[in-house]
Image 1 (tube, helix red, strand yellow):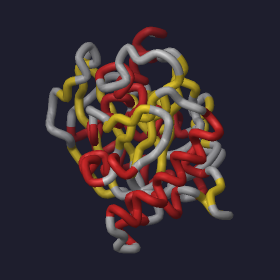
Image 2 (cartoon, rainbow, N blue to C red):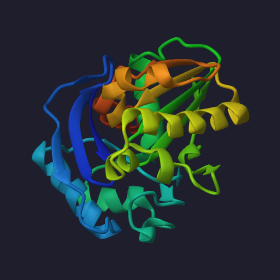
Image 3 (tube, one colour):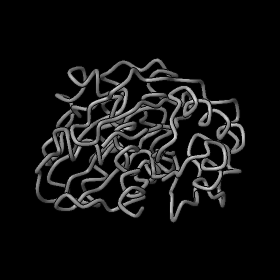
Length: 248
């Protein structure tokens, strides 16, 4: 099935047409900058521009950095707090003139990785962590998504975990991979104490550099770098849009 997936991030909004049978991108990714402040109406305008770029008229899936329940944002990570309480599906549908399904961005990446990547056919409890501007999480039990986990915001050292161990923090504080991996390992150990996953999949931008830090991590669970890399959010968003087709 050919669908449009869009991944909204703190710095960029990118989309592509996706063949959901295979997870293949049918077009090059089109990326626009996230507007400063990432307020609802401004972000909606850019999402509309991405849809217009592809001259798309069908269902659209959007991965968004927030807890999403029935289309409404109940949190706001790396975007304006004005999103809290906003019906993102309605706002994006108005901006694009298309039916829209909105899903948490890390959940979208997890869906793609579980269907097409290293999580495929993996039993038990699988935890997907996306390492980028923040720390996103997606939790699966026997292949079924448990949505909106937001484990990037657990408390660590009396603060928010993603403000200590994200890729953005590593770059901003100019940490070596060894220095950063010590922080990130503490984060994973905390999650393992709480969840006890069988497999941890590491995605997001930092996953492209996995050979520089995975060997430094010490947790019981098996750890695998994600296969979908930066395409995961777009592909997973397109998978979420399949629901709109099924209900039509």
